[in-house]
Length: 324
Image (cartoon, rainbow, N blue to C red; front, side):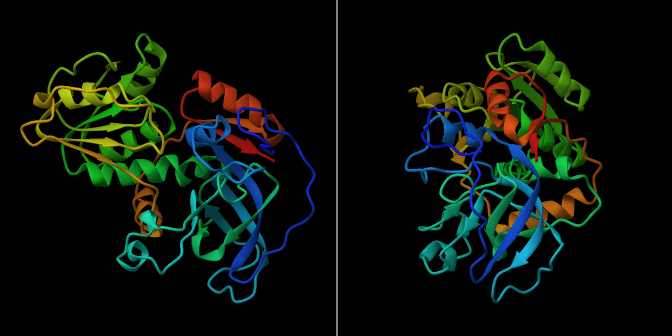
């Protein structure tokens, strides 16, 4: 499914077979999640995408060809391919253990063709072995929604009362992780979205309400998954002294001006940028100890436009997944 130009529908296109170069693998796609970042790419909200581009960065598949020099992976092995798929390894960020801030990165479905396809070429260093215990469809959302949820929770800190603004794919996963850790979840949705609020309660949230509401008690931390900058002042008002607000999306509308008093008393406002391979390793270790309930809605690969439209309109709970 090819995006030939931002703000136009994806087009099912037959392309020549592609083969891996040195250090790469060719992967047959089994499932690919549909992420809000895919919307940002397709809607032209992220600058300078590869054009044309095949979107998709929550990829589960099996290796069907190994490029020269690839070790540690085998033909037929099931792997996951995430958003960050290449780093330079030589810039100051890569050399200091911060590859998520690499000066010359490549991203699945944005600057390198992604998983809305039957096959994909990937850097072997960023193809994570997944084992065989969980279904392809359930694993796909973990490769971005799950990983960004995990990284945002780690960056948010150890606070007990956790507010989640925007209860979609990432929040419904991280809520379960946080509850498993012994924390309390406060879920914030669009005003009037009682169905999403009930969904949050069904997963164990102690409170669910509108993003315009104040929680019944001050939050220790708040994580914003919705791409709405207006939520930042609301979240700052909701956290206690010394609280932290994490903006977890790659794109957000402009943050409005707000009075200094809601930032004062050592409240912190930080962002999450991309992921590191270590995040994937750490998250997999945690997931193996939990019984996560991943809510998914599946679509045929050729119905990617419908999946994107449904995501944009909020017509499903959890995550959408494309299946070839």
